[in-house]
Length: 253
Image (cartoon, rainbow, N blue to C red; front, side, top):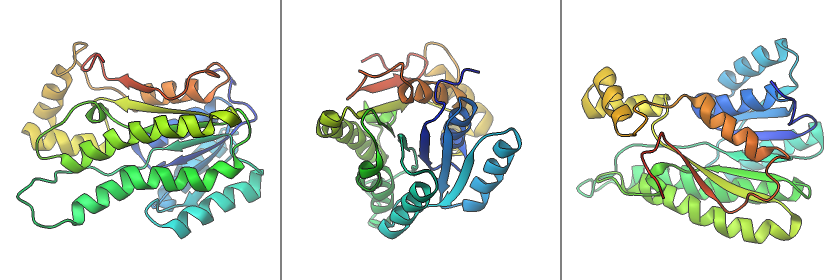
């Protein structure tokens, strides 16, 4: 493994599991100091302890991205330890159906608050601590590229992340801070497994999901982490305002 992120400080939301955990782990393996932030601080601490045992400099932080005070405290805790943030990864997310015949707005509100509003708030809180040449990486989805019936909130929020990414890329360009979105297809995570079960049961659903892409398989979280590490590195100084699809060829924009 290279050390191309050596000396950088990364802050990853939703790092207790899935894609967020994989990104935090990859950043640490590539030499970054990493804050694993999530509501489930205990899970983040378990991952952090494992990484520390291999020599990585990491810390766990409690962070509910839907709570402004929690965001501010998590950012302040990271900055008090390492003085700055070089890479912000807005990964925390929430899925699930929001059909038109459901009169309860709670699920809609929760999904939009987690997937979209939180990206703005966390970035706003972190941006004063990002130096020139910093990085912001937002997790969108292939559902930010097309719609799925019954999943309006998820689709709308992930489309919104792409628009927000482009606006923030322009706003932060004078400081040479890049802002990009990653749009994964089916990735082997707990959220995806819930989707598999809705399709046809977990095993059959996974098989059918894999067939949706020309390459014929569900992605591993490490593949998303590899792309995030590239965007965070000095290899990508001019990549900004992009929504990069990684899905086995399911969407070819």
